[in-house]
Amino acid sequence: MQTVSSVLDSISDVGRDATRGGYSRGVFTSPELSLREWFSTEATARGLSVETDRNGILWAWWDATDSRDGALVTGSHLDSVPGGGAFDGPLGVASALVAVDLLRERGVRPNRSLAVTVFPEEEGSRFGVSCLGSRLLTGTLDPDRVRALTDADGTTFADAARAAGLDPTHLGRDEQAIRRIGDFVELHVEQGRGLIDLDAAVAIGSTMLGHGRWRLSITGQGNHAGTTLMADRADPMIAAAQVVLAARKIAAEQDGARATVGRLQPVPGGTNVIASRVDLWLDVRHEEDAVTASLIERIHGQAQKICAFEGCRATLTEESRSGTVHFDGALQRTLGLALGRSFPGTPTLPTGAGHDAGILGTVAPTAMLFVRNPTGISHSPEEFVERDDADAGATALADVLEDLL
Ligand code: GLV
Ligand code: MN
Ligand code: MN
Ligand code: MN
Picture 1 (tube, rainbow, N blue to C red):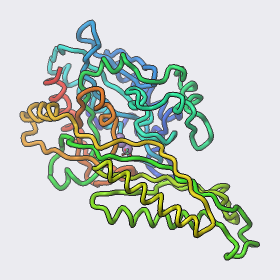
Picture 2 (picture 1 turned 90 degrees about the vertical axis):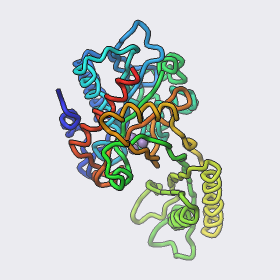
Picture 3 (picture 1 turned 30 degrees about the vertical axis):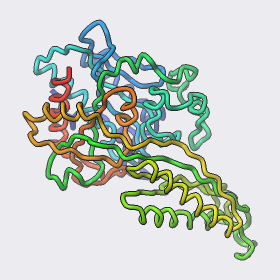
Picture 4 (picture 1 turned 135 degrees about the vertical axis):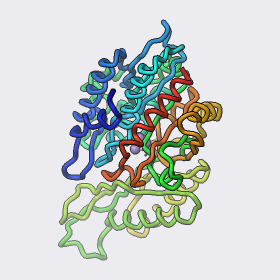
């Protein structure tokens, strides 16, 4: 039987990013498409039957009865942030495949069907909206808006989906998929220091921090870097720099808040050109949704003041938002009991990251398992999981699935 690490080793060359380091596996780009192929091959080799739904979610079925309704579903994603680590997403997929092996080895006879799933565009790295697949499934996104989303090269989601073999006219709320998800459990690499501090390999997820993304477009006057006197400029980059600092200050003054500008795009983007526009993306998170709303309002207000002073204009557009999620209490208790045999005293941990399990909580009970990351770093090539911990995670997932099946 394969270990989780040996499964992950088989994809360790896919989507390596020589420039950024780590992996860049944007949804429906060739690395992510080859990972989807790889998943289908691995699942088929395990006797699972693979299908792609209307939103591009892959489902690998272990059919136990003649109905797939109310199935137990586990899985994660294979897309990455630009220059991301090897585990964010793929660990949950590889662990689910190994958990199927373990269940078979234990001779488990499921009372309901089990599906291993792969969700597209969890990171929102290519088209801007995180958890795009699960949001489409649950009907919280307008399919027309999704079809029109563009990537950095101007390719629409509709075209990218078509090139990946999907029919983009079929995107949207999926009643069949909703009926099929009886319970959803996602295993994920821990993305902070929680498990290091607790000295444990595995934890049960308690909450997922509310978060949102906004694009702030700052328009000024494009001009020549040599001929334009400093006093004569309306430089949106100068405004953007102050907005970045204002966002940090506003978040730092609010207990538990996080605000990040991780992406900023000057247009047209020339060394000797004063930009005509700067787009910057704000990621703001807080456990109270009203506080997240007030943080973004304050940052926007500050941006308006800064822009007025700099002779620029700012327009704010919300790209996605999700409230804080409390994972299903009964399912958390079931996980605790299932883990009691091999992992007594498994701790619970909140997460500051976003996950499809959070989005799917509106249509079914959902839960998460986190596996220790000894660097405490994620969305970076330094993200890591020790081999023994990866195997512990797959065993924990198998224990949980066995109890739930
Ligand atoms: C995704 O991992 C996110 O939390 O943004
Ligand atoms: Mn993830
Ligand atoms: Mn991530
Ligand atoms: Mn995530």
